[in-house]
Image 1 (spheres, rainbow, N blue to C red):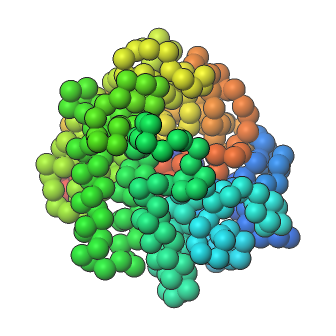
Image 2 (image 1 turned 120 degrees about the vertical axis):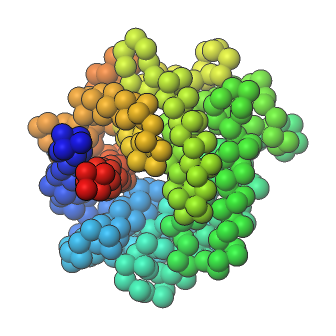
Amino acid sequence: MEKKKAYFSELSGLYKNELLNRVLPFWLEKSQDVEYGGYFTCLDREGNVFDTDKFIWLQGRQVWMFSVMYHRVQKREDWLACARQGAEFLKKYGHDGEYNWYFSLTREGSPLVEPYNIFSGTFAAMAFSQLSVATQNAEYAEIAQKTFSQVLRRMENPKGRWNKAVPGTRNMKGFSLPMILCNLSLEMEPLLEKDFMEETVETCIHEVMDVFYRPELGLIVENVAADGSLADNFDGRLLNPGHALEAMWFIMDLGVRLGRKSLIEKAVKIALAEVEYGWDKTHGGIFYFMDRLGRPPQQLEWDQKLWWVHIETLITMLKGYQLTGREECLEWFHRVHDYTWKHFMDPEFPEWYGYLNREGEVLLPLKGGKWKGCFHVPRGLYQCWKTLEEIEKTCTSEML
């Protein structure tokens, strides 16, 4: 047991050091726009800016990340200042006045892409909720609440008037929104009425675990028909192992919050099936997209290996092991850990690569772009660090 405790302690230190001494300093020093506010996310391998457009998803995620670090790790004023200046930029330029959040802005804050994407709102709500908790600022709390209300109002038709699909021909609903709401509901909990919070959570759990999880497949599908049935078309056959794996640690967190051991056990069972199914038996790593019938996927990037998929899997497997003690979770954590640190971590410059080809070679040396920002890597390092600490404590208590 002493040996096991030392092992988890060493791993915990590895994740903590990578987060605090390499990844967070990269974003703190390289991404802040000191002239106009907000953050640059299009950063090359060394952290040089190669495009100045600002994407609301990534602006909100970075506000959230530095708010979390300030609130949960250490009350460093530079972390809080980083979060606050990004939030002020978002507050001033990020929405249309009704808390419909644009997709992207110019460097100066002029809107570039209409608020067609509901996920801009989910990450803005996360950002302002966590910053309000960290600062006790009532205005930030109000922005989070109003934004969350807009997200819920748009659930039935997330893209609204920007939806390109012809209504009535092939009505589908996607997994992404209920998945994100599982996590966002917990983030918003301090600002929500208890009954409303519980109702929202139950709806999300039902959607994820009873609608999109298909017992006949043992897997989660990315889209279903409006009546909840499986559809035999590109969207209806689509699997995204990374989404499913990320969702399962959200469900585990909800299981802990609600005291439902059975929910945790089911999430771990699904996660183990997903990682086994999604693992590339030839080259290692987890596929980006798959087709549930084994047909050619629509996405040409289907076989790429992406940073977030692997990092979210690390969190899921560690939490699964912590909460259930299942050795399969620890075995998968080791396998994914070895692959992730070997292929995504850049030993020469801070932050991690995001995009590999199937063989595990770097496709793009960038550290940030339109979709990759200050989120999955630091959040994953933080979650793994803290979960490993909890596992280490369990080892200690078992020794007493």
